[in-house]
Image (cartoon, rainbow, N blue to C red; front, side, top):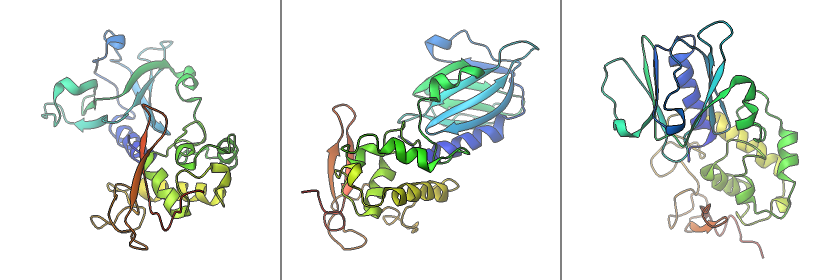
Length: 268
């Protein structure tokens, strides 16, 4: 699933393509919105909230409803921008939303969530989220308070809880555990310096939000962009110990956790 910085870039791409333009057509290829028509609406902006995308629209006529198109990329979703008549790079059967202006055709492929909500009810779809690491309203103190609600939860799981802080996916969770020197199974209440870990999380996302290829090591060379993520059995970039991996989380929600046995000793 995309990390928060990837979703932030998607929001910026959509905003640049659509903001200020009037929709000449809309095509929703999901059953619950099959008859929805946003043609004539003006796109106000697109913003990210954690891993969620909110495209805000102004009603076509005075007094008509202002809507927010709420989408989530999940595992395979992606928004792509085309010019009218340009051939799509992905199959049409994967398209879930098509928004058209005079200059652009914007297609959402394989989106995990597609819904329209009245603008004043956005809180229904994102109000449960914790502070957004890339949001204008980022609040470190509130994020730490939420993370500390259950001190027994393993840090590798706690970092993925979007109701505590929004924007961290499995990649960053693994990398943050490594750079903090803690095993993913260590209870969050036992992390030596949790504020430092949270600040590092924000720093990682901020540094990567403008990049097409993410890195946590600062090295963009192939095979050296990540400390541990997806590097099982490869030598640790610090100590040369082979990286290990295990599955963590509840059934159906398991994630592969990568760690270095030397740099991140397992809890007793």
